[in-house]
Image (cartoon, rainbow, N blue to C red):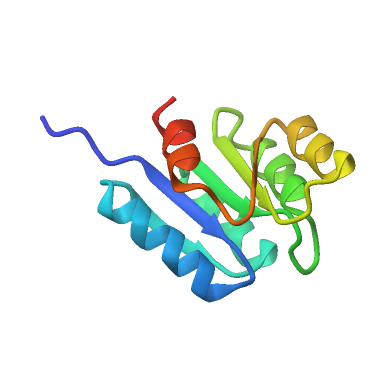
Length: 118
């Protein structure tokens, strides 16, 4: 029986960046879906039961950390990565408090690969 691919929801209000990350993940064997806002991502995450959430921190409506918290209310085991060009202590602490791994932007693809492989 074939193992199903790891499913990843990529959330970034910069659609080009979201598409680039999704394309790279797809090339590495992940099944990806893109959302360009937290409001779009939340119902997708809950309906499809993704394995991993990769999100920008600064999104319209709510932060990526808040999105992680909201998704985890239903999907406690989802792994999460929060990315941001803003690497101040408050941003990093908020991501970690939500239970996510923090990665600075521009995202180092080898660092992202390490997180996904863990």
